[in-house]
Length: 289
Ligand SMILES: NCCCN[C@H]1CC[C@H](NCCCN)CC1
Image 1 (cartoon, protein in one colour):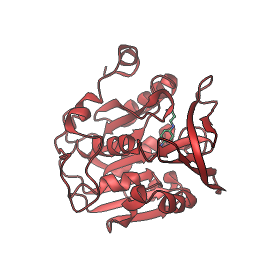
Image 2: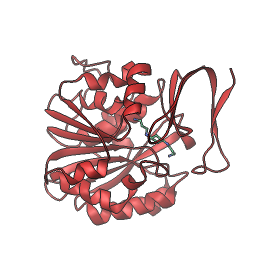
Image 3: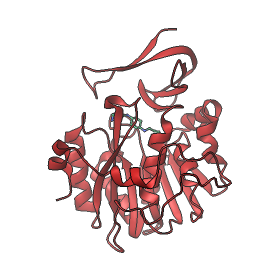
Image 4: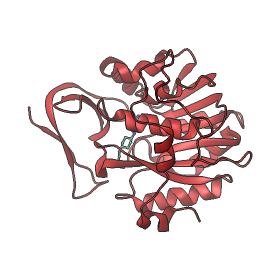
């Protein structure tokens, strides 16, 4: 009874609110405050330090796009690394790709994993796949220990630059990601909103263009419960076999009902291509040169 409002200095002067039926969990990990509540119209909601991470109703848009934009852009992804993504939703989506043999995930906060398994079983189902290995720790330290050229794809499913994920938006991290990828390997990172954080995005694009010598593209999707109703992604590839992110070479059929979980709710090949179309104000600043 009452309302949750997502008030943050990262989006001054605005706040998205959700009607609360019941608070289900409140706790504090070594890194952040964690809350779960039952909303009236978006299912259960996961909140970290007052910022909405996912809701049962619209998490499909984010988890499917951040996963299939990179994985459908290369012919045969085999080894995949997820940085962050402790809720398990990205793992659920990576598991749809039968070519994948190994899925490593490095999440800094074990409480996020435990809370997701308890309150969001349809999201945390990703942990049940036998190809998954969970590493609890800092993504930068993990990448420093990874042999060069290990992964075909890296997915950086982070929270926002204020908090534990701060370093995942800086150049040294992008350089470590580039080293961990094989030639023609791909990375997809959570890349904020062009309505709210164009300055941050310009820095990210600049750092990526210096670090990834293949292609660098910004894509986006709608997520009703993220501020400004959308979220972007940086799609980059390392030097090597060229990657054309706008044309998925490895399509995943939205009706393909593999042994794994439910059919895709959001992603398909048309929306993959459309995701790279930018409004003019954004094209000028972060569009292809
Ligand atoms: N697996 C879901 C994790 C969600 N990642 C992020 C959670 C915070 C959210 N803030 C949006 C801020 C405005 N761009 C972005 C996605």
